[in-house]
Structures are given as C-alpha cells and as structure tokens.
Amino acid sequence: MLQLVRAGVRAWLRPTGCRGLNALTEEAVPQAAKPESVASAGPQAPVLRRCELPVPAPRRPVQAWVESLRGYEQERVGLAELHPEVFSTAPRLDILHQVATWQKNFKRISYAKTKTRAEVRGGGRKPWPQKGSGRSRHGSIRSPIWRGGGIAHGPRGPTSYYYMLPMKVRVQGLKVALTVKLAQDDLHIVDSLELPTSDPQYLTELARYRRWGDSVLLVDLAHDDMPQNIVAAASGLKTFNLIPAVALSLPKQSIGKMPSLKKGSVQARVSVPHTE
Image (cartoon, rainbow, N blue to C red; front, side):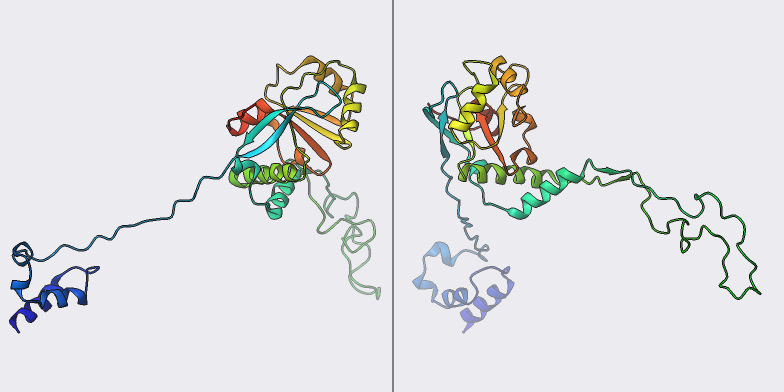
C-alpha cells in the first residue's frame, strides 16, 4: 500500500507529457522484481518522443529534345534536363490571370479629365430671380444638371493604375506559363541561335516548315553577343521577337507565341544541368 502511494505522488509531481497511468502500474511492481539501478533512481525525466517527418522524394528532371536551326529538318541533337519546379509545376489559371492583369495595368496611366462647374466657361450670373417667375430655382447655367454644364463625377486624370504584385506570384506565373507551353509542345529548346544565312525568308520558311505558328519568340542568354544572322533576320520580321533571358516575362508567353529557348539560356535562368 505504501509503494502505491509513493508511485501516485511521483506521478503527480512528474511533468506533463510522461507515461501517465503506465507509470503507476510500473511503480506498483515490487522493488525486488526490478533492477537495482531502476529501483534506486529518483523521479524519472520526461519521455522525449522522436519526431519523424516525412521527407518528400526528389522530383525527376523533365527531359526535352534539343533541336538545331541549321536546317529545315527538325534535327534532334540531344536531350536537356529541365528543372521540375519550373517546367513541371501545377497549372494555375488564377495565377496567370493575376500576373497578366498586373502586367497590363501597372504601367497604365489614364489622362482622361473632365471639367467641373467651376472650370467651365461662363455661368457666373443667376439665370433668373429666385422667386416670381414660376420656374425652378437655379443659380448658374453651368450646373451639372444643365446642358453644357460641368461634370459632377467625371474622371480627373492623370490617373495611375500602378500596384505591385508579390514577387512569388510573378515567378509562379512565369513557371506556370513555361510548364503549359512545354506540355502543349509549344516550347522548343535549341542548341544555338546560329543561322546559315541572315535572310528573313529563311527564318519564315523554317517556322512554316516546323509548324511553329504565326508568332515566334526567340530567347537567348546574352543580350550583346547574339548571333548576327539571327539579329538581322528577326529585325525585318514583325512576327519574330528576339529577347534576352532576363527579359522573359508572362506577356511574352501569351497565347499565340511559340517560344524557342536556347539551351544555355535555360541553364542560366533556372540553373539546371543538361546532357548531350
């Protein structure tokens, strides 16, 4: 009976998070049945449970064919491994809409402006006396309820529609756009932007032969060291845009654009390895 009382007192004085009722049962066992080290020990320390969190398995890189622009045939020269966080993310149409709306409005300035009754010319004299004419009372012919009068609640430009979208949302929008373009087979990776000729007709025939669509976006790593032939050929065409990788944004990935990324620009932008 005395041992049971001692076990109850120890369990009551012990911090929370310990063994609870199991400790009472263990303390009630006679001391002879336990080792001397356990029997001679004082109040036991709290039980520290091991925390094991599930570790997600690493995702495999996305593989894409690397093409060449040196001929009309769609020659495949190797495979490129793309980062799954960039080219295999979950499609989010709401993120695309937010980023596209922000890109359209953050530089928008409306210069529409209307004149109030104080800015309209004339109307300083009272049109007729307050009483005696039988007509409604008015104080100015430039009141907003008069034809030719001022505007009560019109636009008072210039008005800026600028607002800042979080960087995480903008980056996620670009990831979703690249993922969707790759899944739709609208994104092509080339080993180099070198062309055998600077004739714009060659670039037009190349896009038509490979069925790239009416509008093509060419992305290169360097801005100053772009090949001369591709610069000369794209400068004479309205449906071909040549930009560096740092200028890649969501409006450039809009519907109707067929992006062609140089393999070096993909590696430098998302830091992924590639094999040939």
